[in-house]
Length: 222
Image (cartoon, rainbow, N blue to C red; front, side):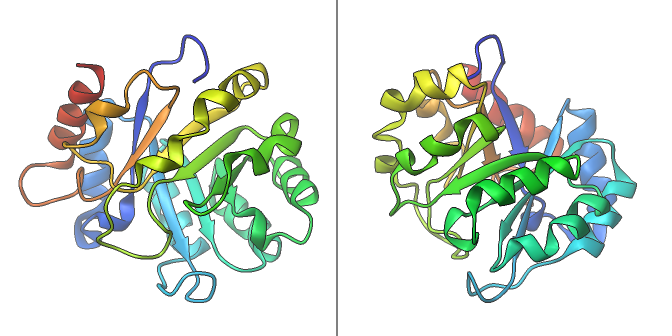
């Protein structure tokens, strides 16, 4: 965790009602939200297919919130400029999809976006160590990307404490994504995570997104 930075929740718009997307984003804004998570899937690197730069551009027109684009796609280098020009403030890529991780991170930052790497549950967090001085963000996947209905995998955090000093020294923001809900988020406080991606725990029929956002944040800080 970056010292002095309170933890934040990053609602994943993939779980939103796209027929009322503007309204739902405004609900998050009214609740004090600061960032939105955009799950980009290509049907190749992961089996599901979601959306591309045009939807990111549309969301950018709806809000000034920070937009983080998680590119679960093959050959992300080909699309970096498209997503960043569409409005992505942060671009997160999987190292295994990059021909040169260092070059991809450099390209993202040269285009004016923050750059981050994503570690899957079957990968070691230490794989990002060679790139810490080039990274702004680390996204730890606590489920396997591209598959719904999975439970939180706690073992993904086994090495976080060991890596935390290096992350802090390089001002790398730590985010976690997968299975974050009312039952899991409270147990993840004070372990060095800055940002929590939440999809259906924020966007669901039980309450407006802003209300769910506030309730999650209360559990996180409780």
